[in-house]
Image (tube, rainbow, N blue to C red; front, side, top):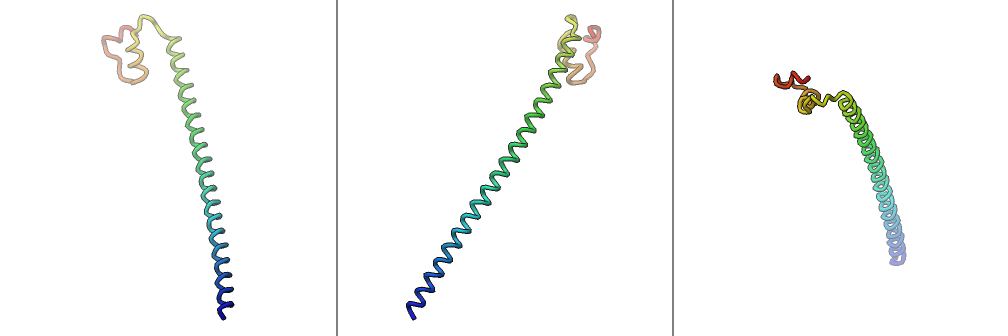
Length: 98
């Protein structure tokens, strides 16, 4: 009877060992898959952000180029800045220059 019980216990031990191996390997696989997906999402988000920054830089470069082409040396820089960037009314003391 003890030989049968020992054989049964060894068989259960082997099954438990195999189960532990399967659980560990599947857990590692899921972790790797989630990490890879996270990296891909993060990379896509970063690329989209870089593209957005490039668009902003291009737009600002065009705007500065346009202002440089229309720049009048007699016009104070402050008046241009206030008028174009902040969009506040130009002070009366600056209006004659515009």
